[in-house]
Image (cartoon, rainbow, N blue to C red; front, side, top):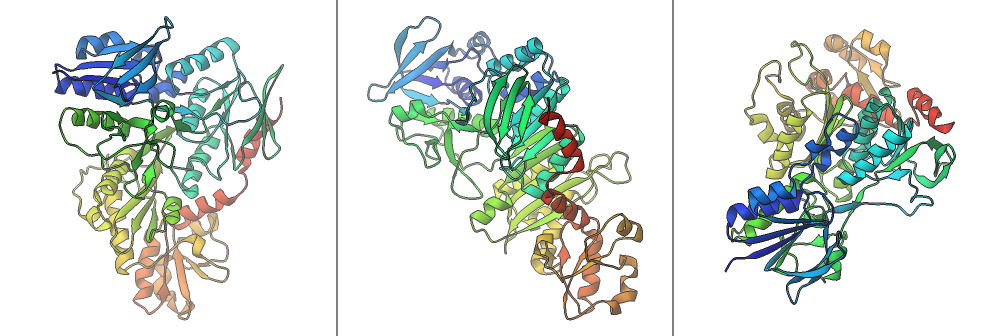
Length: 565
């Protein structure tokens, strides 16, 4: 007898499940319910449509109900919302929003893919018509219509996560002045550690975006001139409209009312086969809790990649292929004007909270061979475990080459590779694309040296007043800026000036990015000195000290235009 499968939600996970089910079972009856007007739309492309990088709204519609029906023989019912699940009867109660009719639909299996909804904090004035969220095509249409009709000049994005930063860039493309308000001490707080987020913030400021960090909206108020946003710091921002981008929460109302078990983070709890506590009901996508492959506990990871894989896997399991979902590592990437920022695995903050015994390294290699035109710097932070060297997480910010390096490191995290494994990878090389020793190899070399004692390591935050810090850069580099209190001996003079260095104290050398200071470490160690290389060199020190500063002069100037009308 043919199976009947009901799917709730027509975005990434639900549409993928429906297509996979049909490919595996030509006889199954498949019905997909979507409460909105669209299925299988490119939600990640919405900011770029609003910025007119994507010119045609139609390009966001990957499938229509008609095309899906024609190709996959899946019955798609848009503007139909499943409002209740009667598990004992295996029936879903459906509301047709076009006619108001309610009816029941039976099922043999049900796949829940309700997604997540933007979080609206309980702040006075948050229901203003000048405050938007962005999750769906109707959301984008509302923002686009406001821009076209009201001709605004200034917008504030409340929330410094991925969508917030993408919106800042794309509203800038539409000719608006933009500002970002983030309550955490740095932008992208769940993706990047603060010293890595500084590169992103600095670039945003260069492009004209004002940034408030460690601050939050406490009140919204409309007036005849537009919208006022009161911040907890006391500052009052003036703009024409705001976009809330303070995160999402899993949509679990339907699951909860059906008696399906929720996890400790508020998402739907599923087994490794993606089944709920009802074996006839599977759940996938942004609404479910999954295992974090590095940290080990439950996690909410609202990303399109995991949702698509889960949709395919749920379909496989319904059709008899016994597959298990091992978990997720939260690999993510975003474009911020001319930079790309990406991360995979766990951040240092998360690893510390989970009491991991781990080490971190900073490096700033070129994106491709330095002698080939157009090379740019990759700012990299990689975390690995002691003593085995397993890669636990990575963060990269740069102009080019970020994507392929983060994908390699994501594969390493997911498959349990170590720094030793990275040294041995055979990677494609030609001068326009990489170096013979790719940045991934360099991660392995540094990790190997750290773990076997060839290069004892320290970090700038480890330094204490009175520590002996040695700058081994050139005279011209020293004159352009240096660490306060450092002693300057260029690397090429170091062997001749060893007598100037103490043997009863630890010496902390640094250079521009950590390469020359490693050479200094090897010289000093073999001459009887105590030494620890400062990871990442002056470039990392500058990021850390700039991050600690309250505001750059550029940001202070940008902020002024939002503090007055």
